[in-house]
Image (cartoon, rainbow, N blue to C red; front, side, top):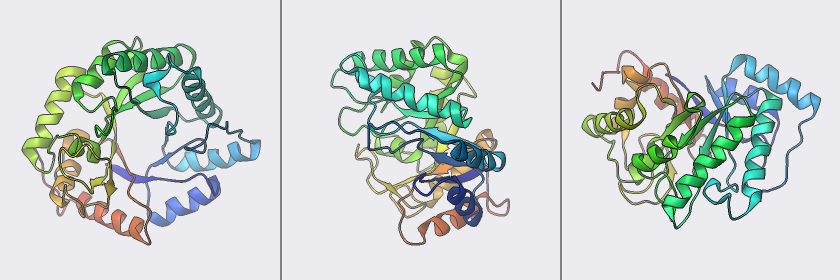
Length: 277
């Protein structure tokens, strides 16, 4: 598995290039705009050229920012407008895949229908892969259960461009105990039952600061949280996912990026890996 980090675009793509090299990244994830603002991001030709240099070396995934709520596109058009803008930004930069949270809504059934509609509207107009991310279950978030994600997937017309991004912390927080091989294999089997094989294309590799089933979304450092090191040893040694990319979204604290990467690389070593199957 190729591993890396979510990187801030605040300092520019040249900074990301150098920081990724320093940390030993093999993949990168970014927001294509300020994730806490509705303001559109306009890329200059210089930005685009700088990104090309970055993307020649590293696979780059985009992540939809925090504000667009795809489960409520019928209540306020700005959610759909924001989604379109970020997808268009991906097109300008040459990013081929975007991870999306499925949003939140008290009426979960209505919410899943709206998420599928939002994805359908985007895929009708743009050449991009959409990666649905599972949720921790905090508040009224959509996608806590695999069956909820499957409900969205069933209503998406272009399934060839729709995949899954599994967040390990969110799985654990939503009640799937993946701290052991039995739990991990159970969730993989459930996903394959509803989606078929090869629909997972990206992993968010995060430990959890909160307990299994807490439905409280708090990422933590690899092996330092409630999931523990064995969970990541199992996941990273699973040959079914050896071809995938894994992105860490661990808290930016001191030199923890360096420490988290060292842990990941040690778990990926053939000297310590062992199959979970």
